[in-house]
Image (tube, rainbow, N blue to C red; front, side, top):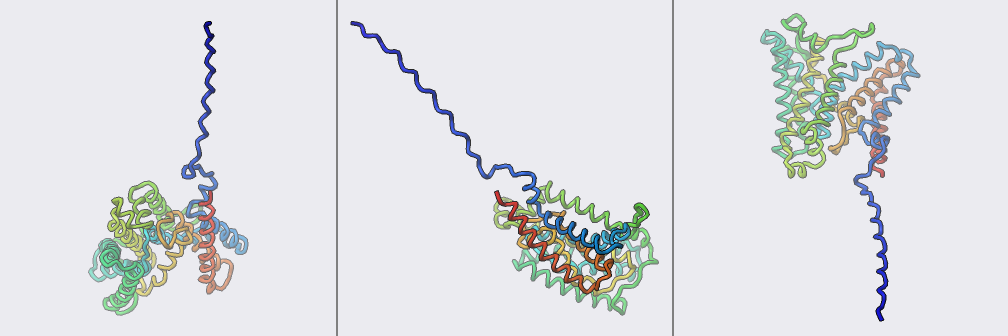
Length: 358
């Protein structure tokens, strides 16, 4: 008897593949979380608070001319704070930045007056001098392996003593001779120390330079290979060197950037006041660092932005002028600035902790 073959049972359908697991490394963060990750967020929050405070307690602070004065104070500080911040992102400090400004101005003034040449000659010699000081700091740091704190502290003392001694040798006192009647002075003043009228208010040209330098520094950090090098050497220079980053070149270039900033601010001071006191600039290096720290730069390097020190310098300008407009004792300025530094550091710490949460 023929046995009917049973139809083969249909094979069960293959189970659907499990849903792909999301890798925590590729999870897209919200826009708010990405904004919180920006280094300058803490400084922006602080700046809004400081502005609102002085706006409410000092009626004269609300005037357009007062804002122009605040911006001027911030710009002189901020032009130097930007290269100092880039250097800090690269993992180093420059304690000679304050007196380097005075050295640059004195060099231009003494060269121009003593040699009786066009002031532009003194300006360019001062530029070479400032870049050379920055290059020397970077070179000595690399060759010796000493911390930048010690290297630039030595440069600070050398420049401070030289400023006073050389000025006394050539002028017989502690200030440079006036160069206001020399050839090229008016042209140089228009470049470094002129004013631009906006809506009936005279705004110092340094404000526009300050914003332009901030834009260039931001582009440099975020859109160029050199910007990647800065973050790399600040994060871990040995790892950066292992992947081909020119660590020595990057550090020397950053120190020279501080020198270039010192030259520019020095020229502004010289052509604003026609003469320079040899003892000026001492202590300003800490203000530059404070502006960078308030702006979100870490003292350990590898983290920060160019926008942050701009906001930090703006806070400095608001505090320095706001205390005057509020008719307070100006002796409280440093105390207020210290409080702002601590608050900004705590806010930056909180912002970073929130940004790294998943």
